[in-house]
Amino acid sequence: MTITRRTTLGLLGSAPLLAAPSVQAQAPVEITFNYPIAVGGPIPRLIDAYCEEFARANPRFRVKPIYAGSYQDTLTKTLTAMRGGDAPQIACLLSTDMFTLIDEDAVLAWDDLPGVERAWLDSFYPGFLENSRTGGKTWGIPFQRSTVVLYWNKELFREAGLNPDMPPENWAQQVEFAQKLTKRQGDTTTQWGMQIPSSGFPYWLFQALTTQNDVRLMNEEGTRTFFADPKVAEALQYWVDLANRYRVHPPGIVEWGTTPRDFFERKVAMMWTTTGNLTNVRRNAQFPFGVGMLPAGKRRGSPTGGGNLYVFKSANPAQREAAISFARFLTTPERAAHWGIETGYVAVTPASWQTPAMQAYVAEFPPAAVARDQLPHAVAELSTHENQRVTKALNDNLQAALLGRKQAGPAMNDAQQEAERILRRYR
Image (tube, rainbow, N blue to C red):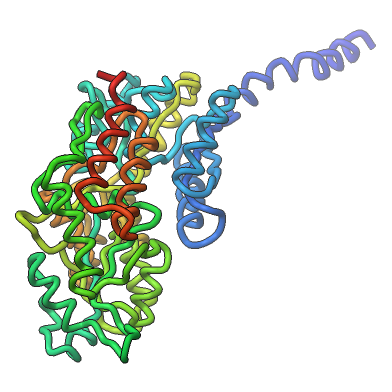
């Protein structure tokens, strides 16, 4: 009895003590990943699949994706959660949110995280790193990145007597082509020559025009803007003239979200929009289309755009390790290539374009390489301290000019005065 009783006590008492460390060791570290898109559709399915694949390859870690709506919604929800002590450990937010996140003391520089090599940080395209670095530190890892490109309907080009394989090369030619592509019945325009969206992200599309007119909108430190430069007003005047003088572009505000649909429905022959729409256009355009670099003004040019990966200070050491592993997982050459092929966003490293999958894709669909080839002409997207307030000042005045409420020069002067008032304290 005594031996039996000791054995029973051993089985009941000691076993759990021996098992507990093993159970704890196997419990994965979970991190939350805030991602800027509504639930549903192909991109969340891709992100879900990446998170599951990452967990299989890294049993120590789990990633819980939270789909938080638009970029603006995601930033607001992320900062609100942070102030309430419930920040995510990693998030995909606009590259232009970098200064805001630094000012909020919300994020860590990737350079300061254990095990992060400079070689990895330098492996991304320099054009994307312009919006990822400041003060000698890397704050964002390029992931969901883009540029503005030109899409055109080859059938409508052919009908207008234009070479369907030759897009406009410069501003003057863009007007000439758009005039031939615009169709009217009496006072009604049935087909516009071109469209540049002016809702949602008007400053971003406008920055393509200012870059082409050889002027930058801000300094690298994010403390000054140059909206009052005469070249900025010239770029805005060109945009206004497309509608009011040349009558090849819809007047007023052109909606960001409906521009691709107008293109699919043959209501517009040429459109400027993100390369992130490439897969959408390929799947939905029921006609042959072209993709090209934006026409040149004094030079070629486009801003970069899209989202970076940020790691938050609230992450504990184990969660930081998980966030680093996940960021490296998402940006391996093979996965960056897969992401680019599936979405139309630009694969963010030169190595991703050397993968067999990407090389085969470009061979079969050459337009996929246009955004990459435009990167040497690209500049950093408008980004400053208090970026949302500064871009709102610019957006409001751009739309005032496009609606005919202000002239181009005064509109840009007003935008500059408001930006000066906002940014003065950061100098």
